[in-house]
Amino acid sequence: MLNILIVDDNADKTANIKNLIYEIPEINKKDIKVVPDIKSASLALMEDDNYDLLLLDLFIPFEFGDDPSPEIGVDFLNEIQIDDDKKVPYHIIGITAHVDQIDEYQGDFDKSLWHLIEYIDGVEDWKDVLKNKIEYLIKSKKQIKNEIISKLNFDVAIITALRKPELAHVLKLEIDWLEKKYDNDDMTLYHIGQINKSDGGTIRLVAAAAPQMGMCAASVLSMKLIHKFRPKYLIMCGIAAGIEDSCEMGDILINEEVWDGASGKISTTTEGEHLFLPDPRHKVLDEKLKERFLDLKMSRKYLDEIRTNYIANKPAGALNIQIGPLASVPAVIQNNKQIEELQKHSRKLIGIEMESYGVFYSAGQCSEPKPQAISFKSVCDFANEDKNDFWQDYAAYTSANYMYQIIVNELDF
Image (cartoon, rainbow, N blue to C red):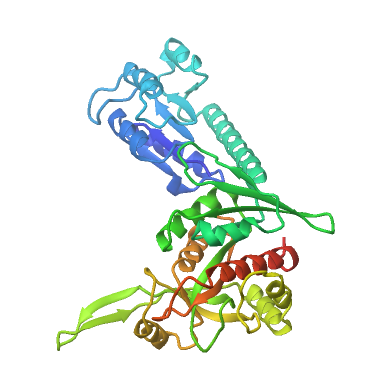
């Protein structure tokens, strides 16, 4: 809960401080770092993540083994506030066993609203003061975190790999979108929206397109969406290559699992031939969601209406859902042999694309609360020699509109 840096060269005193801190349930031992001198403390403030609390021994050496001096500790206090290379701790407490010199240096702490505590071995007063301060910091940090989450807690984050036609069709949905950029150093353009449900409830959404195709860009954008908006669902929407004879153009692919098609080892046979030894890493769809999608597949709910409402050219066949394994690969495939190689490792493969594994991986690796990942990718080609862009718009339309119906009518918020 709190990252704490203790700067103290007295082993017994440090042990007593740590034992007191360990009594606080919210404190994790791995979040406490101890250094014996100012040189090590300076490096910690430059190299480590921000510390919530710095506990500084007033009489401290610059380098371990040197003579300690209160001036060294005070100089370090002043240096922290003017050195841009150091990450300023959120709070600083001085703690010294030299109680006869507290009055002399109290002002150096008071001027920055820090505290200087008397440490007397065998006396409990310092323990009460330090414990109360740490518990206050924990309570404050929890409150700040809860306020941030309540302000940025979204129901759905939508990610696409392309601005056109994928994100374009998401932005055409019956949602009032507002464009927003959050930080000067974040180039992503976010689209904030809200769906007002008939029962009076609302669904908060954010959508964004990655700057390029592929798992790397999708993973980075997924983490940004998760970190900034804390969505309950992280949904990938867009186009993919389907497996010929198992689906039709525009069919919506929902992965019950997704795997990295490029994970493995490249080797050479004794005859000198190229050999790829796959080591697929699978990410799976939530079982409850999978069962819901299987029911929707059987009922064909939403599908005919979505197909009918598309006003441009569309395939002659009905629109369907395909549920099964999906492979994410690092490049666009236009080769039947490559498809056959992928099918050797997943004979029920329904499609091939470039991003969904990165989205599912990010959802699984982020901090709590983790979103549930879903991928709706519609078939725009069959990754063979006849591959072209003719059906991309229709596929982007079917995936976006089916996703919309699922968000409004089927997901639990």
